[in-house]
Amino acid sequence: MLKGMKTITYGYKGFELTLNELYKSVRKRSGRAKILASTLVELGTDDKGNPVMAKIVIVRNRSTRKWLALLSTDVN
Image (cartoon, rainbow, N blue to C red; front, side, top):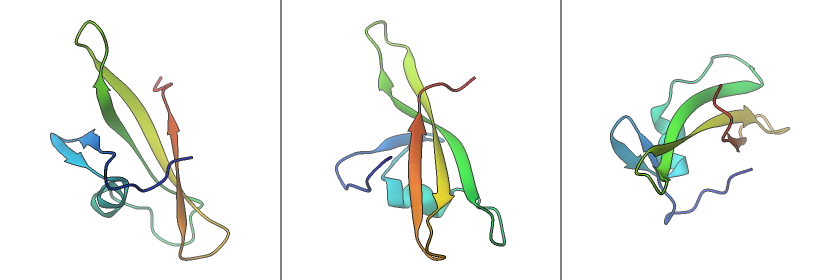
């Protein structure tokens, strides 16, 4: 589970965005969907200079207005 911090950014479509900015910029599913959005982001680079990709899934919390973000490095 991810926490929205101002110091941690994720690469998305050429921009470095915080978690809250990422939530605002992705297209969310309408209605009362449990999974609001999922997107691929870049976390940084490894030792060889290759980008490290991860998937962030944004889900609805038990409350109707709040959301949670989950990160997975298995993007296949």
